[in-house]
Length: 233
Image: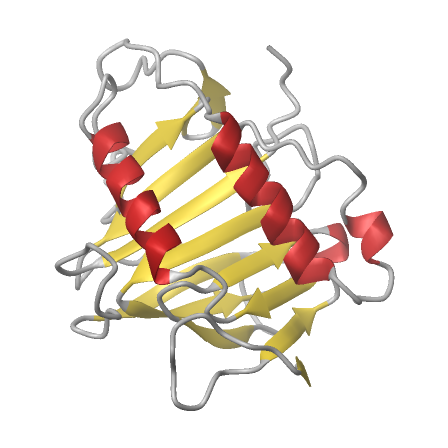
């Protein structure tokens, strides 16, 4: 892992360094200000209320995910995107807001600034059209998986708010080693594209009670991932 100089927006006594975790995968600690975190928390609460509510996704073989999920723009269900949530209540998810696309473009620009070869990872313009919002309570986890249901291979933008977690970033071939464990804190940005776009990744553990003050959350971890589906309209 190549550490780089970086400044956080969390007011930490010792700001964590920006890092290139793998080619095309960049961690920017403390990228979201507290104000932006509060705005995102408020938006996620509104989305979670419906028309398609936040829920535990049921997998094709009958398992139920421990995280709770709500989607914006497109509804994700294993393993495809639809406009209507046929596996929940048949309603259409809320439209993807323009301001969230702007935030995604800011995130990609911030992550890839000064990174050699980044122009091939994130061809302009970056146009995310869906957000998958996951809420982790103190016991929720996410197993090793790939974000591969999109036709587009534009970067994935991941934003973390609330409790810290262990984020495991692996390889593109399988769910095993090699992988790198990264601690993601409130306000952190993680972007992966280019040769790392289909890397397996997971959240093996959340650390309850570690949330930064002032985010608007009383507990748990909120993760917002922005993606280009490549599905058009």
